[in-house]
Image 1: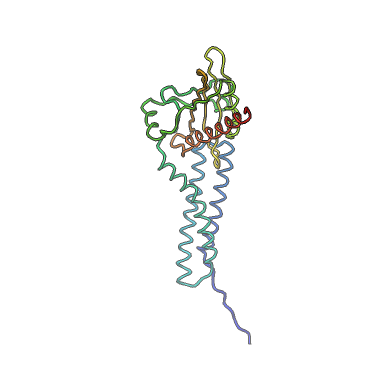
Image 2: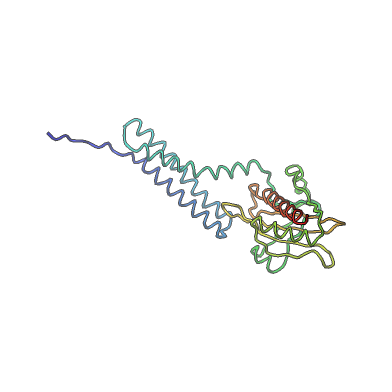
Length: 262
C-alpha cells in the first residue's frame, strides 16, 4: 500500500529574507568598488544607504518568517536564519561608522599647528591630484576646539638636520601607504620644505588631503602636519588616524637611522 507524503510548504518570507540579504550585500560590494574607484563620498554613502535599507527589509522578512514557521510549522527556518545573519553582518560596518560619527567631534581639518596650519601646495600637479580644489582654511575658533578634542596632536621635533629629516619623512609617508602628489625639500629662501599627499581609508578609500611642513631649527627639524577629510560631514576619525600612522612610521624610520649610524 502506497503512502501519500505531503511535503510541508516553504515559508515565502524566509526565501525573501535570504534574497534581500544577498542583494544588499551585492549592492554594498558595488558601492565599495566604485568608492575605491573614485566615486564621490556622498554618492558612495547614498549607495551604501540603499544597501542598508534592503538589509533592514531582509531582517524584517526573517522575523516574519520565524513567526510564520512557529505558528504553521512551515519549512525555511535555516534560510531565514541565514538571511538574518547576512543582513546583520552587512549592518555591522555602517553601525561602526555611525558610532564613529557620534564619538568623534565634528572636525574634518586637523593640524599640529593651530596658529599657523601648513598650507597646501598650489602647483598644477597637486591641484590636478585633488580634483582642482584646495582645502579651505577654517576659523581660528574652530581650530581651538581641536585642543580639547585632540590634545595629543602636537608638532613633531626631530633631532636631525633638515636633509636627514626630509629623507626620513619621505620614507614614512611611503610606508604609511599615502600617494605623494607634490614635494619640495628644505632649502631655498625660506628654508622650509613641503610634502603633499593623499591618504585613503582602508575599506571605502575615502580621500584625505595631507600636507607636511618641514622647518629647520637650530640642531633640530620641526615637522607640522595637516590632514583634511574631503567628506564635509565627518572624518570618521580618519584625520586622527592619519596623524598617528605617520608619527608611528616616522618614529620607526628615525629609530632605524639611529641604529644604522651606531
